[in-house]
Length: 408
Image 1 (cartoon, rainbow, N blue to C red):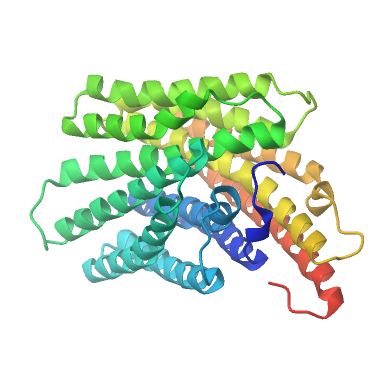
Image 2 (cartoon, one colour):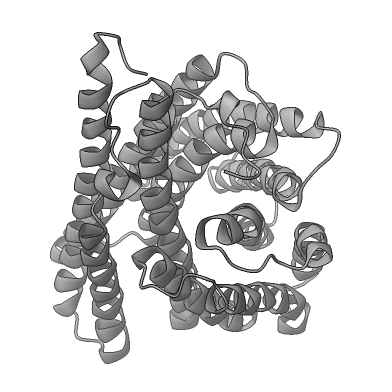
């Protein structure tokens, strides 16, 4: 495909292990929400971080191990070893960190924070170093640099926040919390999603390209807007950040609308839903100081990221199965639609919408028992995601094993 450097494809096991683990963390988060509802022991910080770290960061780092060499030409030597270290340390870090948040045990929380730091900082620094060595950048590779820089800043702020809360530092907790939240959500997640979209929307869905100047200036403009929003907790200072992401969502809408192939596609539907949630969360952000508005902001932003991640997972796994099997010379390699049947992706799309609806009903009505159905719906959604992804991975293992070689 145009713009991809397929000679640098990393082993298939790298991406698959991150994606399958992230689906399991999503399921674990849904079960944690279910337990919190039944036992009346709900922990918002634990639930937020199991999704942002266990599901979102796990997926995004796994995707970057593929995208850096294939999309940006930034090759990571001994990628399997680096990915294995990152995956194991991230799993241990997330489990320990979330346990500390849920239990309130200070030493568990500090241990989890230290593990998360060791999981994310070396890998993000290595990826950023590889990207900085590239002589010429596309909007996608350039944006990845800003996203990884945001991740490093966000991890530092989050670590300071935990050590401050545990009594090991004496800093402004309120400022650290808001700065950490803004950098991680809009800087790390937002910039990375936009940077990837600048290439994959046109390439996968045959749409007009994003305005090149806009795509190049978007990441630094977001970082500058984050800095402005962090100066003081005033809604007016947060407006530029909201405007930037609303503009990205509207341009993405227009690109998808003007695509050449006007056939129904669950991945395009997921992108549409995602951009709708991005607009909603951007409108809420300036006024999300706390309470119900803050919770609704977190939900809409999380639904934006979750919808994009679903769409990318359902594109990346079939693509990797097809290209790896083709490169290995496997006869009758399955097409991308044969790896994961589009009917199953459509089914998951509707499950996803049902989960969203079942969150909004108790949120606005206040009927607590409905949170049970919401948690169950999310659990079914993530279990079905794991089933779909694992079926693609198992298909690869079966097809690749015909040569008697050990498939990576």
